[in-house]
Length: 154
Image 1: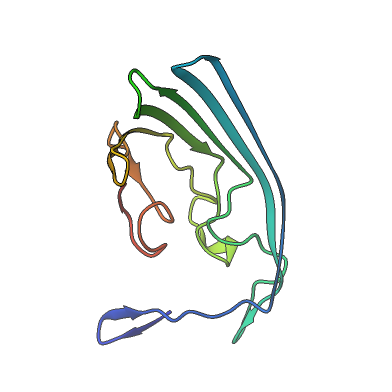
Image 2: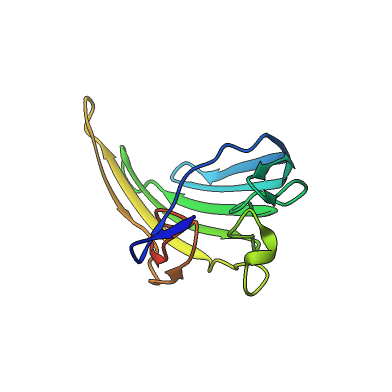
């Protein structure tokens, strides 16, 4: 990033080598025909093996916006044929917002837990759906909405 005419100018740079390791698990349980529970968990350790951008050396740093744990839980109700109503909880551990991990003022960012509601109805050749994301209107920070350089609402 550089400043030009009072504006921040960003440029994308490819990292030399990145080591992405992790494990994903998921469980699905349907106790009765019209009710389903699902949970998914991701554990990841994502590090820059070699990443030098001019004078900045990010080698060994954690990749920006890469939480160690992410968990997603869903409860789906199917009250009538072809209609799904899904309630979702999405949480993650804190993460660095910058590849230069030392630049994060508070160390890391802890995104709030997000609650979402999704509905869908299958008409056969077409499907209609409605998604209500971030039901509690939590303020989402870097990496949650749009670019890592902006803060917005999810």
